[in-house]
Length: 95
Image (cartoon, rainbow, N blue to C red; front, side, top):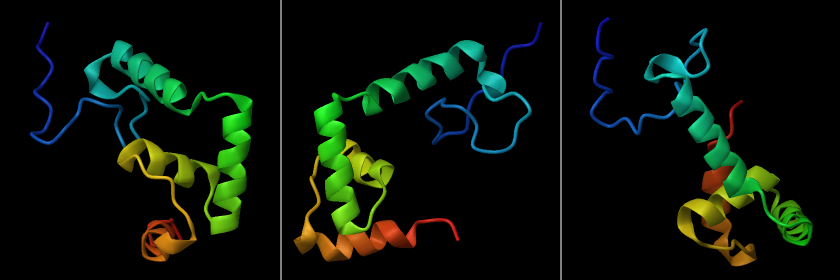
């Protein structure tokens, strides 16, 4: 049995971003389920908070996921004064 190859230097050992036929990639299936559970925990908020975030996101022209990711990644609640950051988020959207 061969040892799995070391991940690339900047890898966080998460699931692959390409179209690998195995959604868990080469790191083993356990990693996939750990990441899936972590993602669910990050977005699993009480209904009232989810509704509040959805309304705020809609007012800013963002999706719920974009707004929530900003909170999770930067710890910031966006508002109308953050027009430059909101524009940067919108530019990252796929065409």
